[in-house]
Image 1 (cartoon, rainbow, N blue to C red):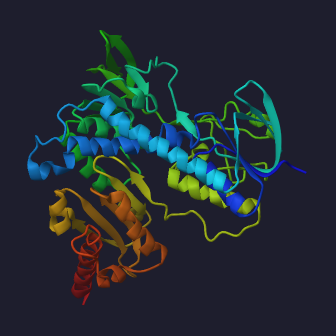
Image 2: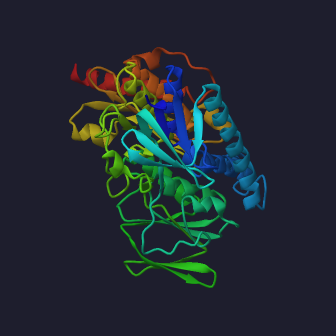
Image 3: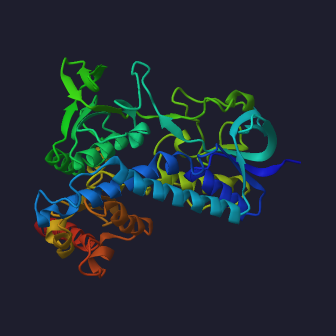
Length: 468
C-alpha cells in the first residue's frame, strides 16, 4: 500500500495541474515543493514576474499612447525599480494565494522540502528542519522546471553580470545593457528595458532572432525594436566580459567592444534535475538536465512521468499545464482526446507582442504546400486607430485549394489574445470562408480576421479568374 496514488515533484504550471487532475479523479495526491517556491519558477522568477514587469513598463512609460500624444509622452518621467517591483510583488503574492487555495480546496497535500528518489516508488523529502521524510507513491510526476543556463566562463555577480532570474532583482535601472542571446527570454527583456530608455545591444551567434517564427513578423518586430534604439549584433559571439569602474565591457570574438552598465545572459535553460538522484529510480537526464518522455509523458520507467520545461520544447507555461493534466489522466486510465500537436499557440511577450499558431510560410514552401496569404494591418482598422497602433498586423496562411487555415501569425497589441480565434477555427477544421462570413464586433482588433480572410479569398479568386 502506497502513501499516495500520485506524488508530484514541483508546483509550477505542469505540477499543479497534474496534482489537481489526480485529485479530481478521486486519488490521494501530494505535491513536494521547496519553501517559498510554491507555484514554481513560473510564479516566482519566470512567467508571472516578467509579464507583470512588462505591463508595469507599458503603463508607466505610456509607450502605447505615443502615436497619439507624441514621442515624448510618458506617464511618469522618472521610473524606479521600486515602481516596477511593487506591482510585480503584489501579483506574485496574489497568484501564490490562488495556488495554495486551489491545492487545499482539492485536498492535495503539500510536502515542504527538497525531493530525492530513494527508489522508483519512494521519495525522500528533505524538510526545512533538517529531517528527511520518506513517502511512497504508485505514480510520480516530475515537474521540477528549469533554471537559467550559466556558462562556466562567466562570473555572474547579480549586479553587473546577471542571468534572466537575477535581472528581476536589480537595484537600479541600467542606462545601458548588453543582452547575450536573442531567444524568447532575451528579446522579451531587451524590448522591456529599451522601452524604459535603456540603450540595449543584443548579441546573437545565429543569423537572426526567433528563427522559429514567421520571417515577416520577425522583421516587423526588429524594426520596432530598432526604433527603440536597440542595436543587433548577429553572427557574433562573446569572448569575455570585463568589469570596469562599476560597469562592464563585453568583448566579442570579432574584436568589437561594447561598454554597458549591465550584461544579461540568456543562454537557454537547464533542467533542475541535478539533486533528484534520478539514478536511484533508473532514470537519466541529458546534458541540459532534460528528461526524455513518450507521447503520454512517461519516462523510461512507465509509472514515472515528466512534464513542463524539464522535458524541453516548447517549454511554455500553457503547454506545461496541459501536459500535467494529460500525464495524470494517463496514469489512472482516464481517456484524453487527441494529442498536443501543431495547434499549440506560441506567445512572445515582447513590446510589441508576437503570437502564432500553425505553420510558417517557409515551412509550407519547403513542404510544397500551395497556400495564399491574407493580411490585415491595424492601421486599416478603426480599433487600431483608437489604440494608436499603426504597426500591428495579422497574417493568415490559407490552403490555396481547399481553403483550410494552415497558420495564423499576429504582431502588435493583443497578439497573444487574438491568436486564440485562429486556433479555434483551425481546431474545428473550418475554412477561411467561415471568417469571411462571420460578423465581428466593431470596432475591434478581432475584425482583422475578416479583413485578412477577404484579402486571401480575393487573391485566390483572382488566380481562378486568370485560369478561366
